[in-house]
Length: 419
Image (cartoon, rainbow, N blue to C red):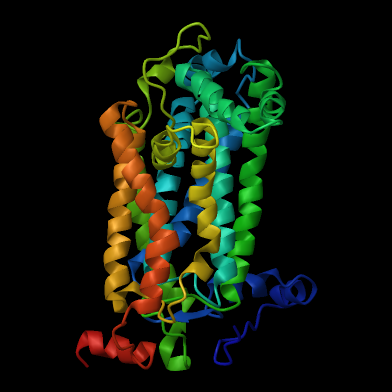
């Protein structure tokens, strides 16, 4: 979006003038995150989580690169290189390992909040469909990266997680077994699989960084959304990104780093699984195989399919698990309401909070044993999840009567302050 009132970059230092005329990188940064980028004046702290996701990505890249220098990618040496070499022999290796492991959890917490904020405030609606689609692509890349990273310590959960998850590809008719063998480089997780997962785990974060750049680029074309869902109508509706939102994001980063530090120093193993401190043993299956916590809702959806109706239950589970993510690509066209923000959509607001509870229930079931009660709850939760996007949201967008929208962002801000 073009903002005629935006401040233009005018370097005064001769060196900066020379650089800007030949490589306008300072101008690009100024227009992206500086005073040259006007943003809606009513953004709340839920908009901090995009920046926090970028901070988490940088933390993962830096710690991951250093850890890769000391990792031994073989079935015989991976476990010792992580739990002995890195933890005890590398200077501050324990800190790097815990920061990287817990950084993945913090990354997913931030991303999930960021996504649910987008769902509530309608950030996926026109003209920001491409921003949402690129966000879902980033989410898929993150899930692939996290899964491959979980395999690398080569503990019991790492090995059997790779065995179970790659085993689901064998449910695909005709080519399933071939795909699984191709992924693992053999018939079971071993050196070939570990080397492949290590190389991809190292590569994919840079692909994520590239997708994030496209995500931000796509965002800057229409401009940021806002809690009212009303588009910017003039200079009075905006403030420069710097210093107003750099200060606000700075506070968010400060709180994020405090919570991150508490997790690293006081509860580094709280979000992990104790069985992963046992070396991988192909002859000893753990009593309860679970992925990392941030995969639990999708794992519950996968396990919810237990009936061989037309297709094998295993294939239904794989289709449902991937479908639960792919359905997000179609959300901009499933929700046809002209009102973006859930604050002005009473029925949609209720459906949104029911969805939040549903995802939490699915997460709890995904981390629980595959007992009848949890399987039934998973089936109910999975059914509602798909019904929300395919039935409830389209019906609400058609029949709902929204609340009156403010005429402008400024009007909403002044009404909120009582002016």
